[in-house]
Figure 1 (tube, helix red, strand yellow):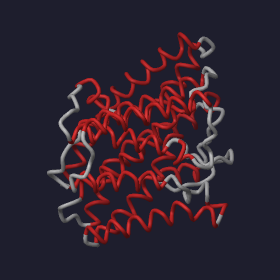
Figure 2 (cartoon, helix red, strand yellow):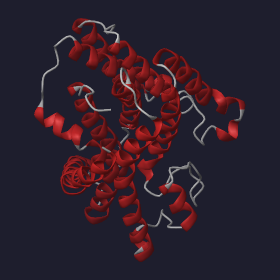
Figure 3 (cartoon, helix red, strand yellow):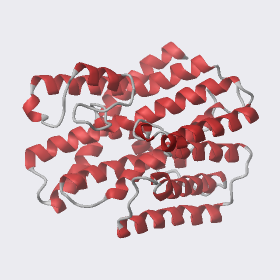
Figure 4 (cartoon, one colour):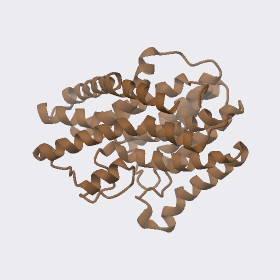
Length: 327
């Protein structure tokens, strides 16, 4: 998968999406409604579909090589943080009253298997890891279909993801166990990747309209406090797709600026995403979250700094070492 283009806009959106989710959790601690901040995850899912298609199109990629690269990219840091959290929960359980280091729960979390935790909720030990369970299923389907020629792969992938998206309606108990329309967001990203590959993206003026329209929709959804639970891919997924489509269209037409600060945040977005709940929670336990104008900005600083530190000191060196094994 070498030689794939690096999209600056995608890196920038990754950073902003991670900060959006962090802001949601900071506001949650202070009991401030910013539910739409969770839509950063929807942006991530669209980006994932786009990146997987653009990183593999036009070249021969064997499924096992694909799986190895995805595992090295996603799993080690997640495993490391999950095991550290499990150790902390075991040693000082009073500091983590809502968490349990039950061995079955920990093992299923490490294996990216969706399950109900001991509290009866569909979250792994490290709560943000629920999104990685969706990513894992998407990678399995995508990697298996790399055996097909590209045109057939695209339509087979469309069929497979649509089956996953709607199977939960036929079998309701499976809806929270991954079989739900969130997979349509990955599919949207795949088709955007195909459009980029065929140079069918709109020009930068339409790109700015899409980006602005998606942002405006997110703002409207937050203002009206729209219920998203059942149709999240439509309520948040549609504007997420517009934002990603707009950004890549602008860049493809030469209108996207190189913003170094956002690029660094994009590079560190995975670390920020994984550690922010722990760093924000630690801050809340230390100083309290009762004063939102003070706590929320401070929480965002702590989440950003801790994420950047994790990226620079742990994630990046770890990836550099492990990628030598799967090069």
